[in-house]
Every structure is written in C-alpha cells, then in structure tokens.
Image (cartoon, rainbow, N blue to C red):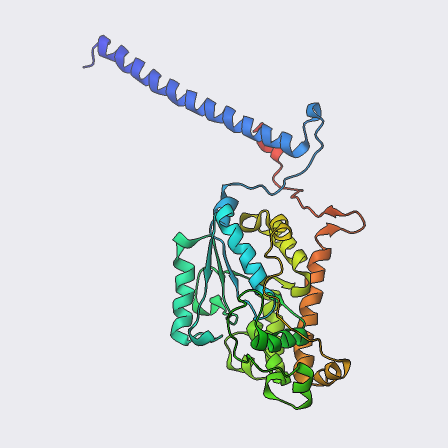
Amino acid sequence: MITTKYFFLLVLITAGFVFILLYHWFSAKVIVGDRLTLRLRELEGDERLGKPPTGIRPTDDLTVREYDEKFVIIYNRVPKTGSTSFVNLTYDLCKKNAFHVLHINITANMHVLSLPNQLKFVRNITAWDNMKPAFYHGHMAFLDFSKYGMPAKPMYINLIRQPLDRLVSYYYFLRYGDDYRPYLVRHRAGDTMTFDECVAKQKPDCDPTNMWLQIPFFCGHHAECWNPGSSWALEQAKRNLVSEYFLVGLTEEMDEFIELLELSLPRLYRGAVSHFQKSNKSHLRRTKSKVEPTPETVARIKESPIWQMENELYEFARDQFHFVQHKLRIPGRGVMQDFLYEKIKPNVASAAKN
C-alpha cells in the first residue's frame, strides 16, 4: 500500500511532467504563430514601414543554393563559331566564381562517341559530384542523357554562326591559322588559292557539303544526323535546339549571349559581361588573311541545298534567341520582367490565427 509520503511525491512528479508538456506546447504555438504573422506581413506589406504588398516571390533559399551547387553545363562547341573566346571567358571566371571547367578531348577529333564511351561519359558526368558545379566543353555532337536512364540531365548551351561565314573562316584558317596560336603550321599552309578560286574550280575544300556541321552537332549521335542533306536531321536539330538546350546564342551577338547567361546563371557567370568587355580575350582566334567571297561566289553557294538547310537552322536559332531576348524586359518600359505567387490557398491569415 502506497504511503502518504510516496503518494505526494508521485503527484509532484506527474505535475512536473504535465508542466513541461504544457510549456513546450505553448512555446511551439507562439513560435509558429509568430512565424506565420511575420510571413503574413511579408505578403500583405507592413504599412508602418511603407512597404506595399508584394505577394510571395521566389527566394534564394537553401534548396535553390543546393541546386546551384549541382550545376552541370555542357557546351558542345561547333568549330569556328567563336567558341574559343567564350571558353576563355569561362576559364577566367571559374576560379572567381568557384566552379570547374573541363575540356572533352575525343580521340582524333571525332565528333561522335562510341557506344561504350557514350554510357561511360553519361555515368561519369552524372556521378562526379566532386567536380560540381561543372562546365564541360568540346567539339562533340549532342548526346541525350535521358536515353541512358540517368536521374538528372545536364544543361546544354551553344553558339551558332551563319553557315557560309563559318565555312569561309574555316577555309582560310586551314591555310593561314589565326592569332591565337600564330606559329602553329596548319594543314593547308602554303596553299594561296582564294575561296572564290576554289569555288570556281569546284575543289573539295569549298564544297558546300563541308557546311554540314551545325545541323549534326545539334541533331546528335544518330547515323542520319551525319547524312548531308537529310531533312530528318534538320528537323531533329530544331527539336533539340528548343527542347534540350537552355540557351543557343549567335556568334555575331556574343555580348548579348553572355548577358543572358549572367542574368540566368549568376552562380557561374556573375561578372561575365564586365569581364568580357574589358578583357583582351573577347575577340580571340581571328583567322588571318581572310578574303570575303564575291557576290557571284555567294550566289553560287546559296544555290546548294546544304546551305539552304544549314541556313534554315541558323535562322530558326536566331529567331529563338531574339524571342528570349525580347521577353527579358517589359515591352516599352525597359524594366526587367519579374514574377510572384498569389491567390494562395489555404489562406495564410487564417492559419496564423489558429
């Protein structure tokens, strides 16, 4: 039988537990109420501070920061599109903005990976967490990561150039090199034939088929992508450009391309515009002794179905790039576009009172 002494001790212990439970419950209620009230003031505006209601805006919370730290960007750069200038800008920024830059060097400058290397490459990039955030670049055709069952896909970006300009630049580059590595002897060194003369004599180096490069780079690793004149390849390149690429800029408008990257991906490209404008790397790799083709030569090249298809892709990319640019700011006001969340249910004010 419990004595009076032990009975009162049991009552005191029980009362103590009840007090502790009530204290924690009351504290949690107050804290939650304060948090909801604070959030409500953020939503409705604090009149005492003269702040107007703003709704719920996206914030750089922990989740967003963690996402930024997992960035993987692939720049499958097309030769002679100004890629050296852009890549050197990225190398300049990587230490300052704390991310990694890696060059994809494929044996014999092949643009398509073998099947085993496709799987190896996809798995490596996806799992290599120590190298994230990462920017990969190389002369490689688009590779669809979803085909290999990966849980996440990288963000693709690229630059595209007017096809005839790219071909002429490459033609003279093979003969005279550029100002990036002026002492390197190129494959056609010593050949002084102009592009106009080459077209007139129907030589292989100026054959319009050589323009068939930007379409397969955007099309991918399918065999049909590399079949010059393939309508299927052109349409696949267009689909990939709008659905698989975060941004495709124009060589002729690289400043605007870099501005969009800085605004969209500040984790990697913070300070890019200012650095690009001030550095001496904004116009690297100028081809030496380039002679612009005559109107007659241009007219002859434009008769080619290959030029017409490559130019169709270029104009498609140009229209998409300009569309993205125009949506950056509010028309007629020059103010940056913004967005917020509103009409949120259940009502936050009601939740704060409960």
